[in-house]
Length: 168
Image (cartoon, rainbow, N blue to C red; front, side, top):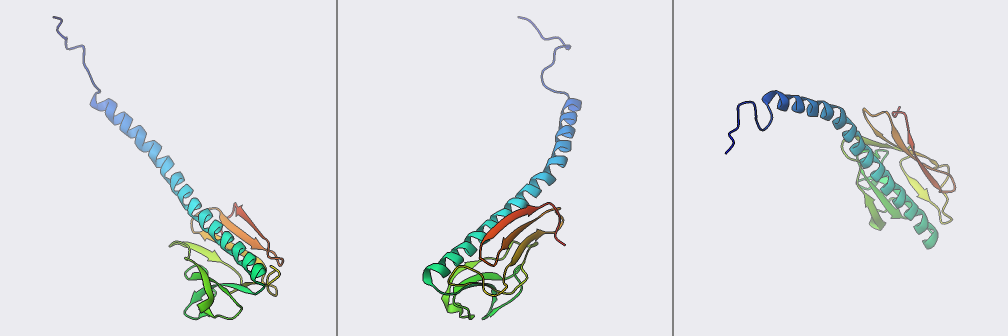
């Protein structure tokens, strides 16, 4: 039977383990911020996709039911300008009769912001927007060099994009 001599060893030395651990920490330090940004951007894109689908559905409902459909951030029985912190209600009619709400979107997550230049968006029976309500939703996340936009023309058509600049 052959005996192992001290020059033959199995396993890794402490130095080798520390070097591997150091390299793994360096890799993690560079990838964790990137992974976090991808997660945040996925949240933003998902929210804007839900908003776009809901607004396109509102437009279709206005045409199919031949009536005005309104969209606004709702607080109590009032439409507000606060698109970032309030639920977004979609309802039939142009008054704030929230008994006719047929869809509600949650506000964006914690430090994310949604902006629009008006407190309400209304689709007319022909699918166009009510008087000069065209504009652009901006979805912003502090600390990132990009933002998402969702623009609506006066005809009620939408277009989304990723802008490579932070919100101003």
